[in-house]
Picture 1: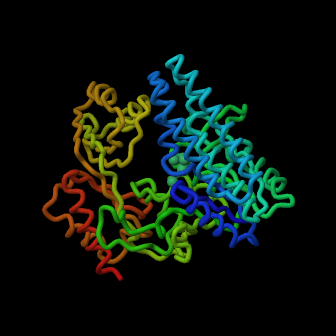
Picture 2 (picture 1 turned 90 degrees about the vertical axis):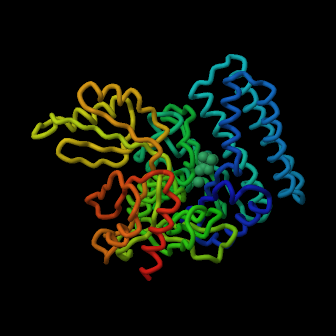
Picture 3 (picture 1 turned 90 degrees about the horizontal axis):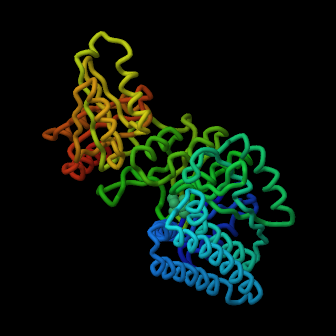
Length: 453
Ligand code: ASP
Ligand code: MG
């Protein structure tokens, strides 16, 4: 079996869906399990609808709900123009989903109160809509397909809106459900992103979670491969919107991909790698508008060469410096500091320490005021804003040739606030002024890649 996940842009309209279906059709002998995202921009719209409903903006919410219904009915009509009864069925299912959505939104509007449960219900409808349409379109084009409700398979605990998948539960449930769905069929399709708690309450995996759904199901069925179909040719050496001369990587390791996803590259949901590592299942990132391109394979470390693979960054971060002479020769200080971060649920990215100093970076949008206030009771604390964090990622990057020297050459003349290199030898990260970010990542990229090959 293989997993084939199509992201929002790969199912954005009827042509994109046709393209996706013909890609699926060419792989039926490998028994595809298709996972689909909502059509592009739909989830954004649903989040907006949820917020507007909470603000009791009835006029705006009903306008957006109407647009949503219309867009899906139009796409279904284009795809199923020649299959009358299927079109009727699809339209009536789209209407059911939209009617229910409207009902929930109306009651949120009436109360002006948005519970996590209502929000989970609202934001998950995009995948319900897209999967219904694509399911009918696959059947109409001769691929006998069963639609499976992802909420039976992906079980989460913890936060309803960023659910934490329970691997054992998923491993137990999924194979039987897929096997049953496959009876007499050529393919099965299910929704990305959406899940439920063990009690059957609605939940979701968080933004971009459809990749994660695909790898969770891939893990549970021991898939041969997990294909992530997007609108780019694969994982690149840097984000081409910011850096010139980037190249597509033909293969990277799970660890490299995880670091890249975590440190700013937006190709994969960062948690996607973990279930795949568990079973050593390769993940392929492929382009649905250019399916001949080999894309990028993400696989076990053994098949991967040493060296720099990518430059990634987080543009908006805060650097927090915690200074205390009491730290010198004292035990327990570090624990005391990090307990404060934990207590306020602020997650720390990079850490670097010296005898009397601890420097950490945190995402710019996190609220650190309380942390700073609390830390200030026992240490001197400085928060630096307008900073960016840049990471160089690659297997054995630190031992590889003169990477460090080239890096330092590229950074000449810029302020460097912190350097951190994990013992994993896979990433070197540092903090610079945000205003210099574009120039720095371009110089680093050209220094590291132009001369490397
Ligand atoms: N539709 C969801 C989102 O936009 C999940 C996904 O597409 O991966 O975040
Ligand atoms: Mg995505």
